Image (cartoon, rainbow, N blue to C red):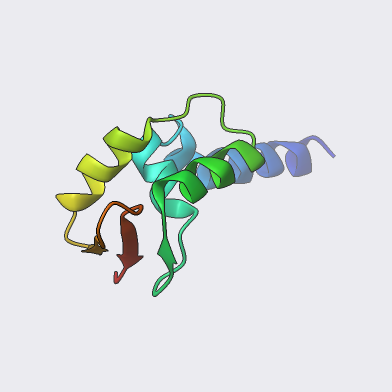
Length: 88
């Protein structure tokens, strides 16, 4: 019985190696967007709140980060919100 619990503990530790730190705000924001989906910064913030994220980046910081990220294309029309489309 002791061997089973030791093996289970080792398995759990090995499976969680990549979760030693929580994702950054922008990694979390990127994870709520499906590939090919168009979304605004306000919708990203809403999804982060729905998933229980406590630290929320501002709309401006999301826009600046995603404009420089090659996995997004940006569409801006007039004074409306900027639309981000995830391509990668």
